Image (cartoon, rainbow, N blue to C red; front, side, top):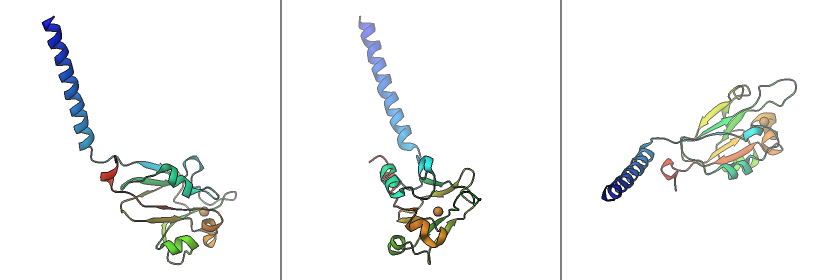
Length: 154
Ligand SMILES: [Cu+2]
């Protein structure tokens, strides 16, 4: 009886040690950055509501990766691209004059174009095709501000 009780105690000590070890492993893990295909199955395309997608998928954290997938130009599909707007005003109005090209019309092919959210700033993503019409009429725009990776479990 005494032996059984002590072995039960040993088992619970071992379980506690295992739990502590697991916590240490989780805490020490350097990066648990996630990878998101923008638009999921819809990918990067005309008419999808990316603002709604961001709300459903967020929050995003530093070093998470956004993957933009879209076909290169061909006879049957719209060409797309990825630009970053410099200001909220440019983003709102889809004014591409000062926008920075991030991925060309061909870079979304295959496994897609990967953008790592390294900076904790507002990222104003838009499609730059047709002089901003994909941004205005096509809703191909969204804003992401990644949170500190230290906050991932908060
Ligand atoms: Cu487009």
